Amino acid sequence: MFTLKILIVEDDSVSALLLQRALEKNAHQIIGIADTGEKALDILEENLADIVMMDINLAGELDGIKTTEIINEKYDIPVVYLSASSDAETLNKVVGTNPSAYVIKPFNIRELNMVIELAIFKDRKEKELQKLNNELEEKVKQRTAELYEANKELIKALEKEREINELKSRIVLNVSHGFKTPLTSILSSAQLLQLYAEKDHPFKQKIAKHSSKIEHSVRALNNLLTSVLFFGKADENKLEFKPKKIFTAAFVKELLDTVKAGIDNEVTIKSEIGELPKTITSDPELIYQVLENLLSNAVKYSKEGKQVDFSLKIEDNQLKAVIVDKGIGIPKAEQNKLFDRFFRAGNVGIIEGSGLGLSIVKKCLEVLHGEITFESEAGKGTTFHVTIPVK
Image (cartoon, rainbow, N blue to C red; front, side, top):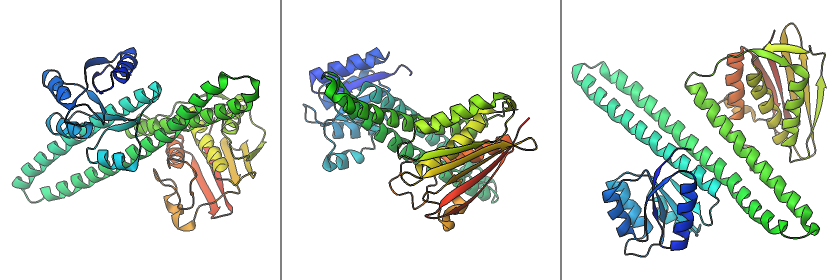
């Protein structure tokens, strides 16, 4: 977490003080606390902030929404709304001001820190993109003036810009949704745990239940973060093949333990491990990503109480894995998009997911020089075959 200059705009002095202490505890610098929009604008005239924490209801004539509109126009500083309300009317009002984030009171400090970090990340990326767009437009004007062929470069540049905008939007949407759902569950469950912990043993079952919810949500959030970071590295061409000695028994045990720990739909995994050498040499992290994503997907998209079959063997210096599920399957018309980023089949329903798992599998296999094939039928399940060269 990096140090930021933060302006707090909050008309409740107790809430403002609590927020100040929470932010300063994380090494942030509070440049001022304002209880009205007018005071907030006066402070920004003297000292610009990196980010503004804005309450919607303020004491002065300017409410938080109007103040944010002025800040957007005059300073272009990211604003995070703080509100005790999450009703549709309030949300409709704030959408027009393009806030960087919206936090419901009472907030969890870990959630707040993550929201701030994402807001700054989003703002910086948007400004970088705007700078790129401005430079690109200037180049296009110059080249268009020089010769007609520059139009071809303009078309290519605009297409690239469209792809960047689309990818950025989809990442923001997926990451925002992925953060919101687990963090809301973490917060509510943690609050309930605190209440139950004060009671005697009759509430142990409830404590266990909500602890399980916390674990599941944290796991989902961690997987999403891992996926986003993975593609960040891949897009910067920093994804490299790093072969190491792999102790096969320990590797397989860790893989199965991790996947089984995340099962919440009573699906079982039947593993058939062939004669494996004590060690093999390849990139353990990439192989783990491939098998963990395929197994986790097989479990997630299986019907309640069904079985996933997993077989693994070494043959002719090839690691061969087969994952079979009896789940929802993949509609035939959508199978050609299966390994695209953010693709989710039309039949997934309410099953959570980011649409990144199989694209990660494909990218890892490209680095590993491996292959993947599959057979699937909607409503009947899917079988994946993976082959990875090893030494």
